[in-house]
Length: 292
Image (cartoon, rainbow, N blue to C red; front, side, top):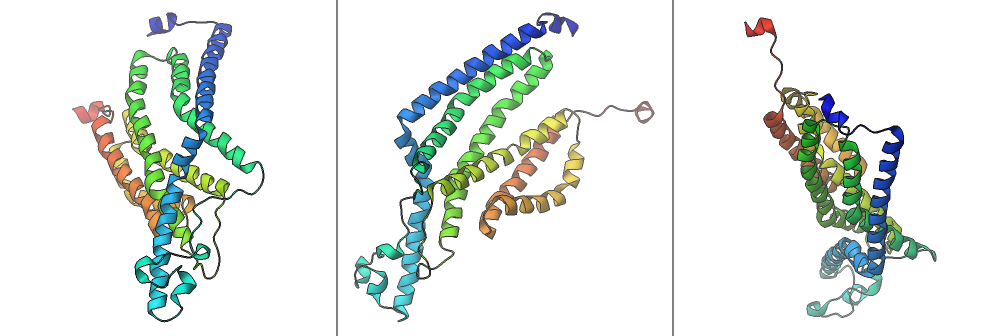
C-alpha cells in the first residue's frame, strides 16, 4: 500500500498549490453558472414561484367552497363574497381571493431575491464540478479500495439528494403554504405573502428533505465500514419512529399532515437503509473459540 502513496507524494507547498488551482477552477465554474442564471432570472423566478401558485389555486378553491356553503346556509349574500349572484359564474371578490403575487417590502428585497436564486442555481449547476475538483485532490491520499467505495456511494447520494429536493418542491411546500393560508377565514384578515418569507420556507423544507434522504447512504456506509450492525439498526427502529416525528415537528409547519409528509419518508428510508445495510454489511471477524 505504501507504493500507492509514493506515486502521489507531494510537498506541503505542492499540495497547497494544487488545492488552490482546483478551488479556482471550481469557483470559475460556479461564476459562469451564476452569470448564466442571471441572464435567465425571470424564467428561474417562475420555476421558484410555481409551488406558491399551486398553493394559491388550492386556497382559492377552498375559500370558494367555504363561502358557497355560507351562502347556501343563508349566513350571507352571494354578492358579499362573489362578483355575481349566479352560482354558475361565481368568482371570489378580490378582497377574499388569495393574492397570486408575492409582496416585497423595501427597494432591495426583489433584487436580493434575484441574487439568491441565481446563487442557488449556480451552486446546483456548478457545484458538482467543484465537488469533483475537491475529490480529485482528496483522492490522491486514499487507497484504491477507499476511492472505489466513495465513488460507489456518491451517485446514490446525489440521486437521493435530488429526489428529496423534488419531494419538497412538488409536495411538501405547496401543501404547507396551503395549510398555513387557510388557517384564517378571509372575513377575519387579508393574507399578504412576503417574497423573502416564501423563499426561506421553500429552501428550508427542500434542503431539509434533501439531507434526510441521505439516511440510507449513511446507514449503508456505516455498516460497510463495520461501525454498526444491521441487528442494532433493527433494535433502534422504535426510537427512530419517535425521533422522526420529533424532527418533523421541528422542521415543518405545525400541522399533522405536513409532519407526516416528512416523518413517513424518514421511516421508509430507514427501512431501505436496513435492507441495504444487511446486503453490504462488513462480515464480523470470527473468534477462534467460537470457530472451534
